[in-house]
Length: 401
Ligand code: ADP
Image (cartoon, rainbow, N blue to C red; front, side):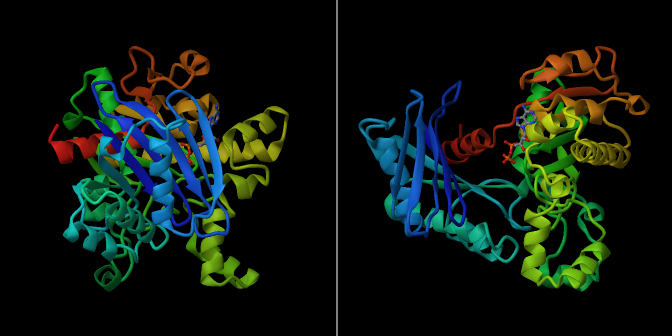
């Protein structure tokens, strides 16, 4: 059965067509970009490794979705004969607010609630809704689902998710910690427990999703009990271009000195800071590691800061859960950067982590145990796959499988 997974942004649509069987496979994937600009483009790749790129006018999401569907049924680079072969569509949705504790089949009620969360994710939710409506236009009979970045974290206790602000701001605007990357945190924790034959409902797990965006989650007895991203994805770890934790006073000081408007300040903390802004080299860990190897001190300091902040959260979350049984590294950096893993996870014996750096150094992004056999705390690197989670949730919700 083919499931189309969509991540609709304001100017782009990322997609994957997955064949959902015992061993799910990606049949095709790609991206439509520059939606709404004079010339849009599509980059498509199929499971025969054939690439197709085109530039054309893409004035809106409906046209963008049509472009994706055309690519999927194209007689040269397509992978299905007709659109009837798409049995369901799963959408990645950035924000489900307090409405959604799990993925849902889209109906009027769900769409209304996603709409109600637009205030909380003004760049993302409206774009997701456009994508949902576009599918409704083009494939009206096909069931659609929404899988939320936030829903896994709805289990957090109020003591974790509340901010020390006047309570009425929570009542009025729903300002609180929501957390993101929930699909990834849940997926890697479940996968690691399966591989290690552990019962997730009895374990204390810390999952570190380290990609361009990065967050870390404390999972106790199968539930997220705290996570580093907050009301927005800016809070928490240092990221490619986002600050992560920062003294609010520093931001106000910068705004005053640099004469920044609210929207300029928003763009500053989201796009101009993090590893890229601090190093003035790159947001890409590979570039920073290469520069550090050549002796660039700023690059080395950036890497040290990055690892320090991840380590600090691990300590905090072990404290929150009164211990930890399993630490998981995932995301592009967690899966591939052995230097980051070494810096974060070595010298953690106080916590019961005996890190095996020999395995770590030789590793090439596979699901692997990185702790010594007698380590009290297990450490694993696990490859995440958010599209697969969305497709699996979709199959479960729509077909009950
Ligand atoms: P996104 O959050 O956009 O999904 P990814 O999870 O793909 O990002 O992670 C992207 C990051 O992974 C890049 O910034 C890059 O620094 C890092 N990365 C990818 N491969 C490697 C590698 N071999 N060594 C170090 N870092 C890597």
